[in-house]
Structures are given as C-alpha cells and as structure tokens.
Length: 214
Ligand SMILES: C[S@@+](CC[C@H](N)C(=O)[O-])C[C@H]1O[C@@H](n2cnc3c(N)ncnc32)[C@H](O)[C@@H]1O
Image (cartoon, rainbow, N blue to C red; front, top):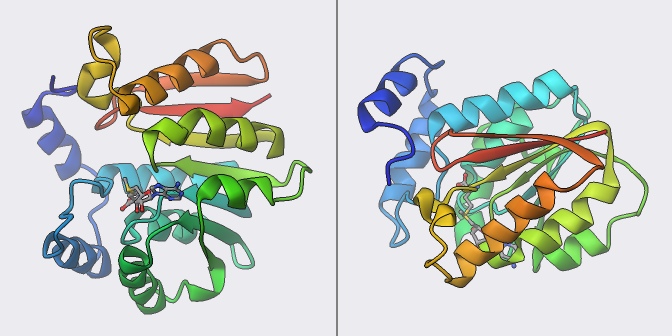
C-alpha cells in the first residue's frame, strides 16, 4: 500500500529545504552498498527530525538504529553547542560509513557511538529523566522493549519519534503476523493506551509516531 500517493511524495520533497552536498554524497555512497538506501530515512523526514530537535530545545538525544548515519546527522545538526547524541547500533560495517560522514560534517564531538544491542545500552543509562529526544528506527521486534526503556528516562516535554509505524500498511492487515509487523503493531497499541504520554501518528513516508512525555 502507498501510504502517500508517490506524486504527492515527490511534491513534498520538492518543497522541503534541500539536502546539502554532504547528505547527497551519503545517499550516493549508501546506494553502492549491498544494503542500498532502503533502510535510510528520506530527506524530508531528516529535515523534520532536525526541526523537532530544535523545537524541543533538546540537549541530550538518543538514536536507536544508525545504519550509515543519515538520521544521526539530521538529529545532531539540531542540537545546540554542547548537546550530545547517543547513537546505538550493532553494525561496525555500516557505522564506519556513518563516522566518516560525522567527521566531514564536524559532528564527531557531538555523537557518542555505542556498538552493542541497543537494549543493553538503554538499560545501562541512568534512570533519571535526562533524555530530551529519541529516534527509534532499529529492529522492529525490539520496538516495545526500547519504548519501555525510553519513556521513564524522558524528561517532561521530551519527545520520541518512532519510524515505520505503518510498515507499508501491513499493520492494518491482521492476516500479516510476521515478527516485524507484530513488533510495530504491539508498540502502536502500547503507545495509544499509555497515559504517561501524548501522541500523534502521521503519514510521513512509512508512518511516524510522535510521543511527548507529559
Ligand atoms: C533502518 S536502519 C536505520 C536507518 C538510519 N536511521 C538512517 O537514517 O539511515 C536499522 C539499523 O538498526 C540496527 N540494528 C538492528 N538491530 C539492532 C539492535 N538490536 N541494536 C541496535 N541496533 C540494531 C541495524 O544494524 C541498522 O543499522
């Protein structure tokens, strides 16, 4: 299912602040990898992340799912001087690409990369409410557990952005029971019933959910 008509998606991209040379180069290099660009967020989604980080005044952000670094660059660019992004992934191969682009973007000081299962990294964070912003874009079966680690650590007014919450519309189809769809579906239900947060789901690309801690 197309969440948004492809012609509308093109129009949206054409009316978004354009990607700079560094982001365009990153997309071009990612395209040459066996994984390709299918896991990478789109440019309009990246601009939205930068804007949301700026609007929330975030100083400490967490990203679950770095890949080659497109979303990390967009998040880190929204942080103020002295702000930090904790970037979580399990792949050295993909994040080696990311770290080269972080260097080129002058963002190395702002980004702390942790190569480990993200659940372990989150679990080891202090329990106080210090996270201002989080972006969730890793293995889908892990989504509910990541959310449960993140919400208690989110400051009041802090924001979680969850990616791929529609899975190409498959979350609506109860005959689809693969573990990725089940993970996302379970999280969508958890968020909708969670009184600790205020939430809205938006048809941006593959669907995103904004979750704001009360
Ligand atoms: C969809 S990609 C992230 C795309 C990235 N946000 C971007 O804009 O290019 C998902 C990433 O999650 C990582 N991942 C998968 N399982 C993980 C886990 N258990 N802990 C941390 N990262 C994981 C993968 O290695 C992959 O890089």
